[in-house]
Amino acid sequence: MSDPAGSPESPEPASAPGRFDALRARLPDTRAETERRLDRLVRENRFTIAVVFPLVGAFALVGSAEGWVPEPLAFNPWFVLLGVLVMRSPLVVGVLPEIDRRALGWLGVLIVYTYAIELFGVATGWPYGSFEYTVSLGPMIAGVPVALPVFFIPLVVNAYLLCLLLLGPRVSNRWLRLATVIAGVVAMDVVLDPGAVALGFWSFGGGAFYGVPLSNYAGWVLSATVAVVALDRAFDADGLRERLRDCEFALDDMVSFVILWGGINLWYGNPIPVAVAVAFGVGLVRADRFDARLFAPRR
Image (cartoon, rainbow, N blue to C red; front, side):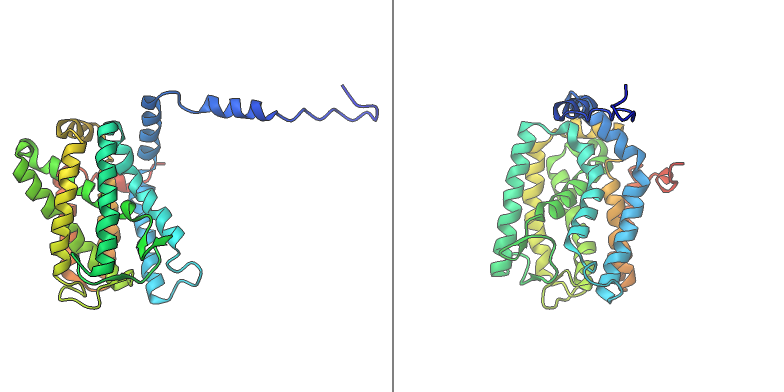
């Protein structure tokens, strides 16, 4: 039909309820369907998530520290947080099917501990040594980033999952599992802290190990112990190992860690952290998690 002037009628705009119904129809109806869609999303974007993001992140962070990146892009906290969240996504999606109410409860305990020990550490210098954040990592409370669990907890979970794979049947030995994961977490900090100090993310005011005091690593032994105990109670080890067998990308966040922090330490001439990052890469290869196909972008 046409209006009196002869022009065609404009289509009626979709009503708000109609738009909502169309959107709702596109959303998954069950948790299992949600998990399948997330699996597919990560799987189809592995190269971008696990390789491109850490490479761009390394260039951006070094560029910010060296003054090559102009304000307000230099060390922009929202860009940093966005990059971290994207790189964490394979880990989150990987363990999602194993998260139930018990796991949520223990992860909540670990989040509370993470804030408490960091606030105490900033205020007193114990157990990590005297330190302060010198670059904003998003909103801060009493000198501690609100997003702190996003930075800390995945480090522990990555080490935990890698050790589950590498230990094989010996993973049932609780004390061996505890010692191995603690060593893995401390080793990750051997890579992380010197690189972060070199960038100027935080400062200990000096230290024997690339500007990091040795007391920091004693503090990480404590926090890693608490974290491993919490993870042991949060998850069923057999269930996690089964999920890892079916989910090839679950440790892609650790691939990103090796690329990002190994590259930053290489730029600043920190050979021991670089060697430890390479060792993690070897561990990922032995666990069949450093998939060469990851470095071939999908066409």
